[in-house]
Length: 290
Image (cartoon, rainbow, N blue to C red; front, side):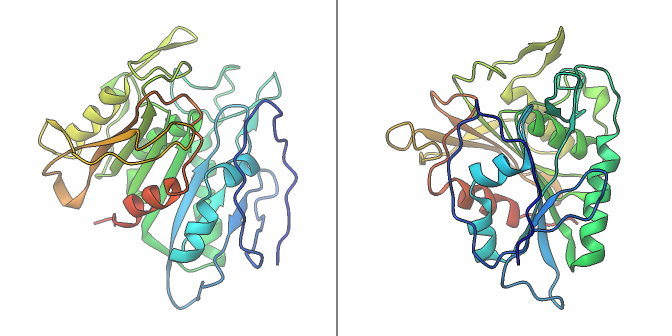
């Protein structure tokens, strides 16, 4: 069964199409801010399933997110629930998440997106058996900033996050989590929107990709040296060959992991390779809340 929720898909956003399993279910429960939920056909109520919350970027939508990253196909194979919430619209009509000072509550609405995302998890947990130790966040751009915010402010609910082209708080005092969370930052070295080397948005600074993961390496008690792994792999189909490199911090506490995947010459919106979703899913599913 599939019930579709209308959403605005922006014409300027380039979308990669992936096929969603025909008998997947899409539901909405929160009337004021609905969300899409992918339920794999292998779901069984007696077996709690992992849950991924996938967050769109600024001016994007849940439908673009569901289409772009190809998560549903991999979630179907792995028995994973995937929720696609939506931010609220600013004065320009663009959907956003109130994540950090840098991104992206341009109208200073101070909307409580933390509470909203927790309510999404709670609503899904009422309807489906959710493995509370295996709840994850994946966010692109503004959604990546929001993933970091949730890891900092609501660490008790998440085992791991993935930020694609996002960034952490610039001030370490803004991130004092009450438990440890695994973190993966994926970033293009040629990103001209959220700079790999860090920058400012609206006069507010955000850290570099390396600075974002370095902050979490300290939080997770890792050895404070980023180690590059030897084998390259393919994350962006628009760049020939195996263009991406993996780096990670070693000896993190409580089974956590802090990693940086660099898409060399990659831009702000990567064109996901056929194994992008699988690589991300493998990282997430290997993590469980202690």
